[in-house]
Structures are given as structure tokens and as C-alpha cells.
Image (tube, rainbow, N blue to C red):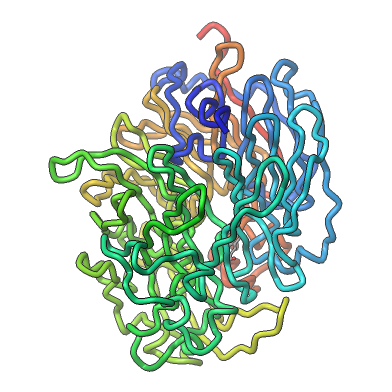
Length: 584
Ligand SMILES: O=C(O)c1cc(C(=O)O)c2c(n1)C(=O)C(=O)c1cc(C(=O)O)[nH]c1-2
């Protein structure tokens, strides 16, 4: 789709969820600067009418802004010429039976806009194409089945004439896949599974690269599992997708293997034979055919729920004196990976969270983590509580997307400092029922600053933290950087914060009506720069408030860590748009 390629290059728009195909969440707009940002103020607001967690962010193309809400996934097209007058509203009729099978709140990470169409992945697995002018449904496709625990929370991505969509349900024994649909007809073009035989995973072991060489051995997506476990093996694809138009490759990661009880996924006592491929894997696929060009598994044989779905940011940086086309992945397991995005060769892998203890380092020859037995929930065994594992299952970073500024060459990353106790137990698979197999308890990292979040600047060439800014709670909002030298993110308490890219210093903050787990975006309208964000606390970090759980209730273990959040904010879905006063 040529329009999309063009739109994402024009900084007047915020044309896709991650800002551009490279996933940089960076804007060349520079009217708002580190000097004048203190004068920023909210200029209009819009209540979405929906409570619970509002992820994703506003997409702006021309004079129209598109936003979407958590279940029931209302889409609004708002007229920027009239402070957000509603041009149209699309409200799907969905069976609320899907709500109990959504693991981590009823979120969606937003819509995709391409040409004259808006694409929405509904919680109930319906992918819809709407007419961008009228909101009328043009077609719909069924991408999954909620009665098996399948749901949809990811934002679709459009490349040329295809729209890609993933699937959620790693805690329900769902077998993950990424699927391409034709944007005009809604027909499925290809589906690439995350586990199983090479033909299903769309791997050619003679051609698909791993650590820069062909994989060689066929069907590792079967052999690295005990019999048939790959069929209910997770590897869901609920994160973000990016695209390199020159290489014609799309990039995404797969989630945790099912169940959380590693003993049920072990081929034998030897961890090395039980990689549970291709869970926890970055895939680079040909955007047209879906064929895997390369793979990189970050956490083979996961024992901690470190889903590998975080965004893969594409950047051109200098490493060892050489200009390289890289992909940077700030993984949930606490390591920041820099890979050659053409070949998948591993260039850098370092801890970006000082509390990480489950592995000492990544072996650069094999790409494998060196796991510490004391924190191995497999080595400790079934029905044993492994304590003090850092990070927690929420990860050193979860779905909240980072930003990359080509001006500084650094990533700006919302992170968590949370640890956990993890007790695996045997669980039977029953379709549509939780298939978790571990009890978790999460708490602030004991050796940290007492809070549970840090917002950091990361050097992806050196693998080093440049500066770090403590936050009371996990930072669950996506970051934005701009050419004006100023960056933005939101906090779980509800603050929209502006910071100096040089040192992280707070330059402005405003407390919005609810906690922010949405992503901060910027655009211009009639030549003036605006910043916009959705408030609405929830997501996994805010599940206690969102789902009305209180005190020490489990809620997959995240509630305990953030139980004091209710003292700072409550539910509510609001868009807030910020600008400088007219005379600036
Ligand atoms: O395994 C899965 O299929 C799956 C799905 C989702 C989701 O779709 O929101 C999350 C997770 N896992 C998960 O592990 C996780 O930490 C998480 C956080 C959130 C969120 O929106 O805050 N979703 C999810």
C-alpha cells in the first residue's frame, strides 16, 4: 500500500501505532522543544465511555484521528477541525464470553489505517476492515476461536496489500501464529505457526538462518518438545510488528511456551534438548510469502513466562566502526539484543535491568542465556517455590513500546524492577480453560530504589544504560521521542511526563484522569504540533484495579506488586490532547 509507506514518512501524521514501519516512535517535529515544553497544556479531551485498560494510541492521518477502546472495542474517528467531533463510531457486537479468556485485561493495542480502510482486531478474534470515511464494515475475517481460549489484542500491521494479525492465549494452550489477509477481500493469504513442523512454521531448514547459518536440522518445532506438546505449546504473537521496506521483511516475536510448568515441556532432564522451538523467537519473514528468512530464540525452554513478543525496533547504527542495519529488542527477560536485521546475526546482548539474576550473560557464540540453577524453576522442580527470581513474569519490560531517536542513537525504554516467587505445578489441558501451571507472587525488586519502574536511555551499540530515572510503579506506557530534544511517556499514576533526552530530567508533567498504559503520539494539525495520549489504567500491571481484584488476590500474580496503585488513580478512558499556547 503506497499510501501507508508515504503517510508514515510525513511527520504531520502519526500513521501507525509505532509511528513508522521501523517502530521508532520518533518524530521529526520540533516545535515543542526542551525549552518551551514547560508551557504545554491540555487543549481538549474526549471520554471514550469505556473503563479498563486503554493501550495503543491515536493514529492521525490528515484531519482525522482514530482511537479504539478496550472491550467492546469501539473505534472512533474524530475530526481534528472541530476539537474531536465524532465523524463516526463503530461498535462491534461481541459476545462477552471472551472476557474471562483474556489473560491480562480486555485491552487492544489499537487500529491500523491504510488507504481508505481502518483495520481492527476485535477481542473475539474478528478482524474487520472499516471504510475510513464512514466507518462502515467492508469485510470481516475470523482469525481464531474464543472457546479454545484464543483472543486478539495486538494492533494489525498493513504492508502493501496485506494486513498481518497475531493471536493471544499463551495461558490457554493456544498454538500461536501470524496470519496475512488480503486487505481488499479479507481472504487469508498465509498463516505461519510458531510451533510444529517446518511447513507450518514456514521454515526451510536449508535456507532459514539462525545465528547467521542455515538451521540445518528439520522440524525443531516438533523435536524440541515432548510428544504432541507443541500442539498446545503457546508461542502466541500478541506484541508488535515492524517492517523494513528495502529488505521486504516483517519482524515479530513469539510468546511463552505452554504451560508455565517447565517439567511438562521437558524432553528429558537435559534442558538443552528442550528448547520448545519456536516459542520466545524473533522471526524475520518475507512480507509477501511469509517464508522465514531468519530466526533467533531469546529464551529457549522458558521457565519464567518471559514472552518474547516485544517490539523489534529497526535502526541504522555504528557498531565497531561499521555502519549496520540492526534490529533492537528490549526483551522481557531483561536483556537488550542488537541483531543484524538482514541475517539475524547476534551483535550485542546485555542486561538493561541491573536486577536480572536468572541468567548471568548471553553466550555470544550460541545466543543462549547462561541460566543460574538457583533461579531455574525446572532445576528447583515441580511443586517447589523458587524465590527471588528477577525479573518477574511481567518482565524487565513488557508490551509498552520503547522509542529510538536517530539524533542520539539511543533507545528510550519504559522498564520494570519487579521480582517474583514461582511455583510450578502439573496441569491438565482442557480447551478453553486456563493452562497456567504455576503460582506466582510478584514484588518490587529488593535491591532496587524501592519503586517498581525505571525509565532508561539505552545505547544499543555498546549495550549500556546511559541514564536511568526511577519511577514508583512499572512504566506501562509507550515512549515518544522528538527532534525537539524532548521525549514523553505516561505513568501508572496517570502522569503525562516530558523529559530531556540528554539526561532524563523532568521538564513537564500533567496528571491525567486515570493511569496511563497507552502510548504517547505526536502530529500536526494546520501546522501546529500536538501531543496526544489515552489514559485508562489496566493491562497486566493494572489488572487489580481493572478487574476489581483487591488485596492479595492472585490475578496471575501481578496484583500484589501494584496493590497500592488504587491510592493514586482509578478506572477511566480518556484521550487528552496537549499543545503550546498559540503565541509560542
Ligand atoms: O501469552 C499470551 O497470549 C499473552 C497475551 C497477552 C495479551 O494479549 O494481552 C499478554 C500476555 N500473554 C502476557 O504475558 C503479558 O505479560 C501481558 C501484558 C499485557 C498487557 O496488555 O498489559 N498483555 C499480556
